Amino acid sequence: MELNFSPIPSTEWMKFQTITQKYFDELKKDNESFTHIIDVKTVVHGKGTDDGVDILLTLSFDDTIFQHQFKWVVQCKCYDGTVAPKDINDINIPTLVHSHQAQGYLLVCKNGVTSGITKLFKALNEKCKMKYQYTIWTGEDFLFRIQSLNKSDAYLKRYFSDYYNFTKAQEAKYVNKKEELKPEKS
Image (cartoon, rainbow, N blue to C red; front, side, top):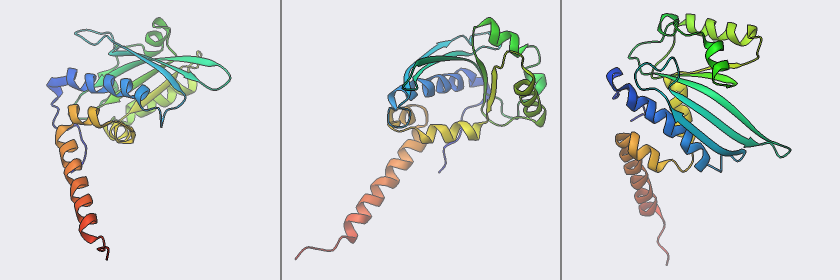
């Protein structure tokens, strides 16, 4: 069994948005993988017409010389198909980032994006006079990040219970098999 978003229909976009928000909240707890992150703040905006802002994410981190903050405007797209430029074309992304005093824009998708979105984000990164960052996480990218979290059992159990139960059953089988194969002490 693999971890995936397919059980979440596009009509349940708030659930996908919550999974995204909680992922960022989990980063602070995962102090083994993300030792440089000292604080994570998420503010949810996406209820109704959100003008392209579902989550405002502020990451505080320490590079051992100075403590920094980086603010992201996060937009979640829980589409069953791919996200295309027409799905975000009513937003001027650089103006949106600027208006929230952020440094970047992250598009998190349940599935993939069209080549048009990829080209748009490439152009934004190359031509943005303010040097903002523009990033896309496809569903596959996001799932990889979720699986990379340490200490994420509670997160997986809550949002991906079938996957969590399956992996725990597999782990138990492995432990039992390992015990069976141990040589007996004489």
